[in-house]
Amino acid sequence: MDGKYLTGTLWIKMIAGCLLVSTVFYFAAFHQIHYRTYDQIQNTGDGNTGGITDEKVIEQYFRYDGDYIQTIGIMAGTYARKNTGILNITLKNARNEVLIWKGQIDIEQLEDNKPMVLPVQKKLDSGESSYCMEIRSDGCSEDNSVTLYCAMGSSVHQGMLRVNGESTEAELEMGIYGDKINYHGKFYWFYVLILIVAFTIFFYWQRRKEETQREGFLHNICNTLSTYRFMIKQLVSRDFKTKYKRSVLGMFWSFLNPLLTMVVQYVVFSTIFRGDIENYPVYLLSASILFTFFTESVGGGLLAIVGNASLIKKVYVPKYIYPVTKVLSTSVNLVISLVPLLAVILITGERINRAYLLIPYILICLIVFSTGMALILSSLMVFFRDVQFLWGIVSLLWMYATPMFYPESIIPDRFRFVLDFNPMYHYISFFRNIILNYSSPQMSEYVYCTAFSVIICAVGALIFSRTQKKFVLYL
Image (cartoon, rainbow, N blue to C red; front, side):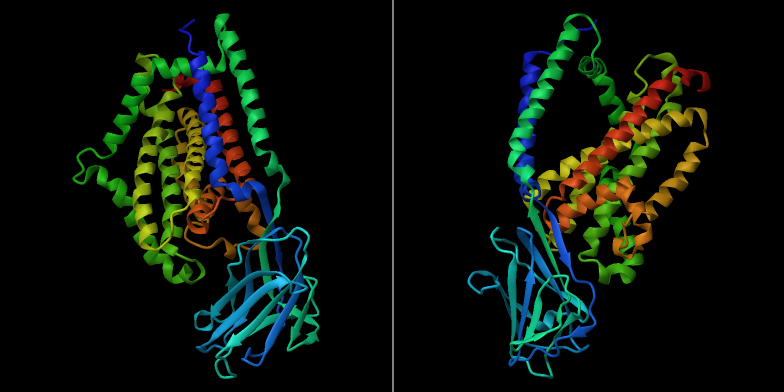
C-alpha cells in the first residue's frame, strides 16, 4: 500500500473549493438559478395595423403568467422604404396604474419584416397577469410611417388589439420572452449543503479504506498524480513543444491559427449567413475554437497508445496516461486560443459580463468529453488501424452537423433531434450564450453538458480498462 493521502487538510481544501465554486456559480448564474424560461409567442400574421401615424394610438392588451419579461419582439413592416420618426411605447398593467416599462424605438433603424425588440428586462408583480402595451408615433405621416403585423381571429396572448380606442378581432404578432420563478432556486444553498455532506461521507469512507490498507477510488487518483506527476508534465510539455518544433512563428501559431481559420470561413460563409446572425465573426470564431480543440485532441488521443508502443513495452506506466496527456497538451492550445477570441469580442463591441465566470465550466466539460472519446478511440485503434481514417470522415460529418458557420434556425424541425443528441452543439451553444447573450444558459443545458461529459468519459474508461491488458499483443 502506498502512502496516505486522504488527510483532513485535503478534505478542508476540497470543501473550500466546493464553496468557492458554488459562490461563483451563484453570482454568475443568479437569474437562471431562480427563473426558468417561459416564452409566449404569436407566430401567425395575416393582417396589419396600417401606417402608425401621429394621429393613431395602438393598444395591445394581453395576458402573461410569467414572473419576468426579458424582451418583447413585435413584427414590423416598413413598406420597403426608409422611414423616419419615433415610436413611443409604454407597458403598464391592464388598469393603467403601474408603469412597467417605457421606451422609444427609432423607426429609421427598423428592418422590413423583422421583429422590433423591446428590451424590457423587468420583474413583474406576482399578483398581476393582465397588461397593456400602448404604442404612439412622433413625427410620422402616411409617407414615412411603419406598420405592425397582427393575427386576425387568433388569441395566443388572450388579449385584444385596439386602434384609436376601437376594438378589433386581432392581436399583434409578437413574442414575449421571459421567465417563471423556479422555486428550487430558493433552496440553492441547502442543496449545496447536502452535496458537501454527501461528499464528506464519501471522503471519510474512502479514508477508512485507505487506513485499512484497501484500495479506494480517491486514493488511487492521488497516488497516480503523486507517482507520475513528473512524467505527466513531461508528456504534456513534449506534445506541446513537438507541435511547433522548427516552426518560425512557434507558439504564435496558437494565436494565429484560429484567426486565419475564422477569416477563411468568414469570407466563404459571411455572404450567405451574415444577415441572419448577429456579430458573425464572434459567432464563427467561438465555435471554431471549441470544435478545433475537440478534433485535434481526439485525433491525437486515438494515436496515443500506438504511437507510444515502444515505451509501453519497456516501462510500466498506467496506459491511460498517454491519451489523457494528449488531451491536456491540446488544452494548452485551447486556453491560448481564447486570447484572439477575446480580442475579436472587444473589437466588435461585445461587452464582458459576469457570465464569463462560467466559461471554465464548459471548457472542463469539453475536456472531459474529449478525454472519454480519446480513451474509446485509442482502445479501438490498437485492434483496428482503420479507426484513424474513419475518424477523419466522422469528424467532418460532425462538423457539418453542428451549427458552426450557419444558424440553427435553418435546420428543419424534423431534423432537430440531431442537435439534441449532438454534444458539440450543446457545448458551443453554451459558450455562445455566455458571449453573445451575456447570460448563463438555462439549467437544462448544464444537465445536458454534464451528462454528455460524464457518460462518455465513464464509457471510455470502462472500454479502456477492459481492453488495455491485450494492447501488448497487438502493438
